[in-house]
Amino acid sequence: MARPVLHDDSLKERLLDTTADLVHRMGPARVTLREVAAEAGTSTTAVYSLFGGKSQLLTAVVDNGFRSFGDAQRGAAGGGLRGLGLAYREWALEHPTLYRLMFGGTLAAYVDCSPTPAVASDAMAPLIEAVTSAQNAGAIRDLPAETVAVAIWGQVHGLVSLQLAELGAPGTDWDAFYSEAIDAIARGWA
Image (cartoon, rainbow, N blue to C red):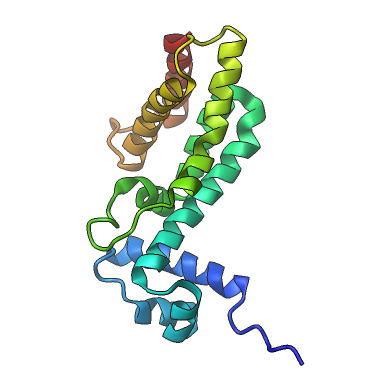
């Protein structure tokens, strides 16, 4: 007779979501595995069984964010660089907590936690592919694709981070501003 599955994917996802929410509300230093388990309706044994400890759980949260982000980027890849840029902002606005955890560096200050390099790199692969495609079409300068991709990423990331931090002037039309900025970035790399 097969043993019953005690800790399934559903519980794993619930723990990842709960952890991200608690880190957002309380800050990474104050989150305990006991609180995560209680909020998710399970035991600390389940957390340890699925992830190991706090560091591994937080790393899994960040990796989960990069996977979700990468899926969104792959889904937008048909729209070229503009499509990827728009999808970048859309994903960040839909997942501000994950976005801050992935790119804010707040977790590493409190616990040994950083994204798994292969997971983070995979999330950026659609951008490098789009840059290469645009270069092959003669639409972007012929520099190393990774260099161009990181520069574009930095520009888009900066704009999105400003919006999430609410640093624009009162009444800023972020949709219009972002659209114009994406066009300006494209012209700058042409």
